[in-house]
Image (cartoon, rainbow, N blue to C red):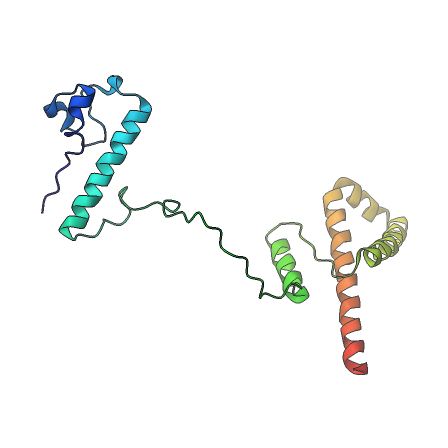
Length: 181
């Protein structure tokens, strides 16, 4: 079945176009007098043409060609009502999953870290680790030079060690709780 495109034929008297010029709509709006129509009018004419083609496909019982401009776009079936939030989910994050996601992100080159302990514990661990790092740098001048040359690597190493300290502490606490409980 051959589909005809005459979406502009009904509108041609309104815009002063000859019916033969309006029927030539292979690429969209008539090529006869595009300067006579504003951009908005051309866009609306194109939408009318697409709607006409969709109606012809639907009337013929033919599915729309995949990947065509006639298919509905992702946002066209927008539901104005927001979906209710799922409050049945566990509000507490899974620390093992968070640690795994942070590790996977670092494998891809992103500097994501997961610190499972509280902020106060994080501050204490960071101060302790800072003392150890300064002691290491005072003993090894090469290490000091490397960290000055690449401070991003030094920071990444520091945060990685801090994350490991906290994870080890959390694992120890979980083992202690399972033994005593």
